[in-house]
Length: 292
Image (tube, rainbow, N blue to C red; front, side, top):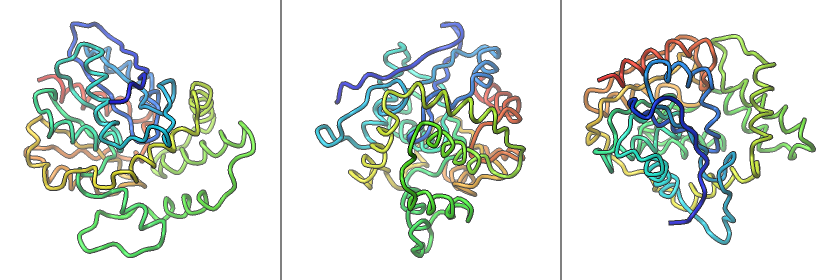
């Protein structure tokens, strides 16, 4: 296993029930909003968030010299738990972090007290291939997961054809545009708050371009996800999707169907991000789910 330093921080009392927050691909841990984390800790939880390798303040990897796969990113979950002295924890996961959480819940059920996945896709569903086929205009095989929304496809097609941003401001403007897309159309978009967040993300990154290694890791082992295993999940599972999800619309219902006893929750107005308007509802649901 590569010795990549992982940045993490924790909040709340060590004696409280632990929640490990797992963010999505190419995303820093601070995308779990401070206010949302605060609601969880105020509810009596010990909350830990971390930066994946090649994001934020965690170590970056020379991928050509030391390639890795999503198995390594998944195994980083265990490393963070071990570093914080956790034999088990409640996993709360967003987007591709939900794939990691599902995989851990199948692979090491004794380490997962409960599982919450937000804006994610079912493990083994090939969500990455679905998105890539949509971006390339290729037909989806029968039985594929639902495609992202048309505005999602149009945005990333344009982004793929555009030249790289010229400077910090242009890069941050592009990051805000991406956040606006992922926010969806169900709630007002606070551009000033988005700028503060994206400036924070830009300024705390060791190397912002290193996040592209997550894509290389996916290509290095396209069959990372085991197929047909979600029935093995033993942890109580809460599956959450926004009513205006642009990236993975309808995927949460499929997760909930495949995990025994899983509960599906639709959050009105929410897209693929975690805006302040939904913090109270999300935190209350997660506190209830992790309170057993």
